[in-house]
Image (cartoon, rainbow, N blue to C red; front, side, top):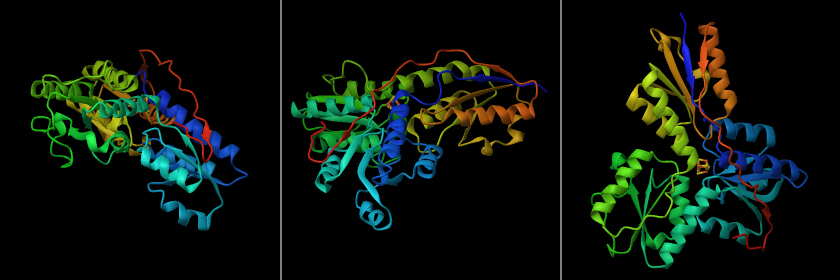
Length: 333
Ligand code: SF4
């Protein structure tokens, strides 16, 4: 039997993820004499990436700066924290400064742009309606932290009720309906976000929309490719960690159009999935390393020696500048 694979392009690492991983690798090597590096939150939402950094570079990941005291009892630390690509609430930066530590801010610039908008509109007296996945998502926490007294979290209209802390766009209330702006997490479904904003616009006719929407280019490009490939395949394989927002949106979109399976690595594949299947689509989240995709292709080549691979589309040519280490006592923002 033969199998045709449609390999989505672009797929995998976006510029923000490349920048963040390189920042950690470089800092871990440069600071090796001073001690181990600490990263606040998973640098990107992929377990393979996190485990490789832990094992190959000796990096420690913390979800709370309070964990550092215990780490210091067991390890020599370089007294430097890297902030993840998803961003942080400003209070975390202040805490690091108060500890007298350095930091490297690997927040994706496209997330920082949303933070800046949240601050700016809050200062002008607007209520920020922040559409996101969940109140626990690190990016949502970071943006919310910029103006907590002026921000209301709103669920994507298809996800209402999943997180009770996220308001329903159909019923959300604000102090002044004429001074409302909508911002979003960068990695949501394009279609669902558009519809959620339409609902808000019907409720608040003077709703302000930022000049360019907040969904990032990598999110849009990967979703576009899934939408293009899905009608041609019997099965879509989406390589993503279950807690990657952009990856799970790819999986949802694929699943709404054809049969789809989410996998972390090729080890999750089952030969029975391919019975009676003539064409398979493959994509990967913006935080999934390319070698995991190649492992899936190698697996399929063993099952189908005549495997045909179709790869159309363009790679993105976007690069973000590497972040500098900000020493204690220096304002980096
Ligand atoms: Fe930045 Fe988009 Fe990548 Fe997130 S998915 S790190 S916002 S480029």
